Image 1 (cartoon, rainbow, N blue to C red):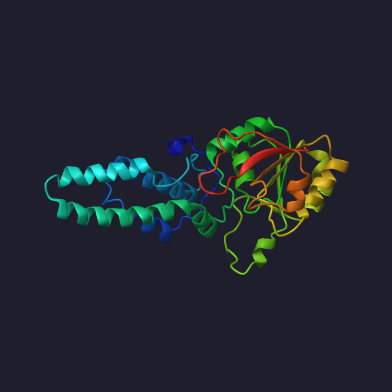
Image 2: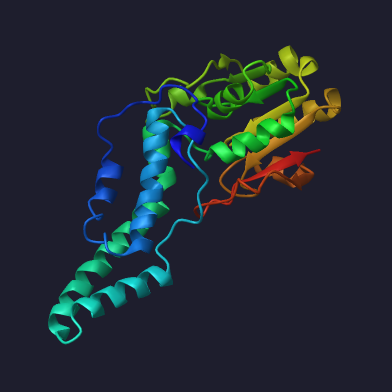
Length: 276
């Protein structure tokens, strides 16, 4: 996608220096002749730069150095030194070490997104467009909205649609608290309070990346089952993994949906579920 096609969620952080990106880009010149590797670096660069500038990025494939990339590097070395194996071995050693570093960096993109932008779940333009189409202009309540990337994207897609973003902002009390402000208006309240205040007035309830350190998500599920059964309840997370409580996953009835443009790019298999 060109930048003109991306959803603008706000101003972004406009950071002048991002150490993670600088380290990754330091390998550009070494692999400039190897399209498969340079394309991988460029994909991650585009994601970081888009979010920093206030745009939701394009979707991502699985990020890793592949066997195809390694073969491309081998061929490049052979082409440069077909009759000079010693020089070829020196260059190969340098490139293998660099490939290992690139692989480590791209596999840890999520850590960088969390550190620099407080984006835990990956929010892309194609996914938010799908989600906006799914909600069809009906009022949406987002629980545990964090810094509000999902709600900001939905608001940008349909400015007249009612999108209520809520979060108790407990992340402000974590040991390594970020000073970043939410990227859109997020009302400070617990998930259960948000349901009590807005549950009757919305059609879709959205909960993304609920923490696995409490059973608040389980209490939300119980409240929806008893008081708001006619609402669509969408959850984004990793089943029995990095998000949500064991109690939630053991009792939730899950129906995967909207995953055409919401697929994992790392070892965390986050998905979208309609939950009963």
